[in-house]
Length: 402
Image (tube, rainbow, N blue to C red; front, top):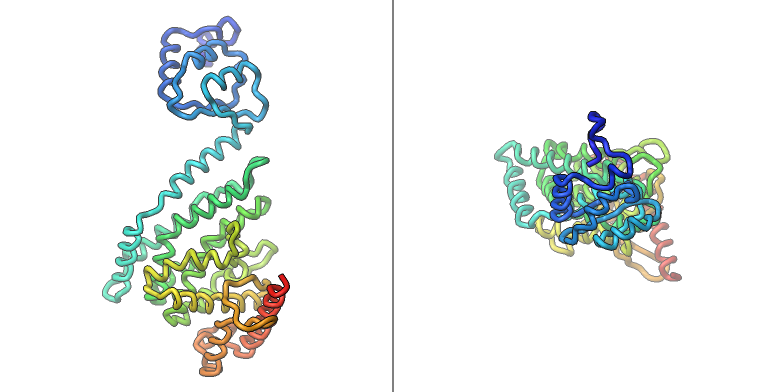
């Protein structure tokens, strides 16, 4: 509208030159302002009378329009804002367009797959794992889903900081919802593969836990940077619970001890120890492990046909084993989602009773130890169980006086 810098005779700069446009330009602007929404960024509206007139001529409001500027708008801009019904956004261009792009991504992210399509994919996976084929389709589907989840913007580009005054909790909620929708198929495939699969098919997803667990550079909002590792936690729990339910002890041990992650305070840590639900997910108004327990329940009751009781039982056993690994790695003791047995200041979790029974039955030949869990050392396992007992009793004591 203001000319081509390669053609100096076409350039419009002076007040007289900017006072009116050629008829063809005015007709084009009338059409644009009628048929499209409008985003204004970086324009004061003070030095372009012809452009102000063109916007003022338009009375249609079929689409939302926005005016982004970090500074208060001058009076001439306010008149157009009111006339056109624009929404004023007090933000600079970088912030505004980044948030617009994220919002557009969110609309696509929340378009969940129809449950029937996931059921079909799961049925195909079970057929691939029946031993009659090389499960090529499963390999390719897993690869595609793992790569897609790994490339989600909430994992790769963030943004990790928000504009001053932005609602961090609302943004965190949006990203949690995105994770829920985008991981549905992947978690179903991992559950079925870990339950029915083999050492060969385990390699197709086990190695990717470290990719999903890669930390973001420091400096961002912890609620957002930590959530980027949420898919790793979801896959860890899904695979570990499925392997335990199927008594695939080698696979369970691999999930608990093989994937490692660079800890934010330096050095490598077991992923299951460093990336608890509490350390990554933190859903608002919910205890993190309870939230993940409820989120994963349909994966196991729908696709592996476990009863709700059976699922909760195997969940607690995996949760307990994960806490032992966390304690062994000196990573603390997160609040678990495990039912409390006992009275007053005692807390005897059901999975501890299960593990003690297994030790009484198998001794040093306990299947988990045989596969290398905790270096295969029964004494180390018993020491960690004794330490966990003290931690559980401390939880019971605090709950009593809460």
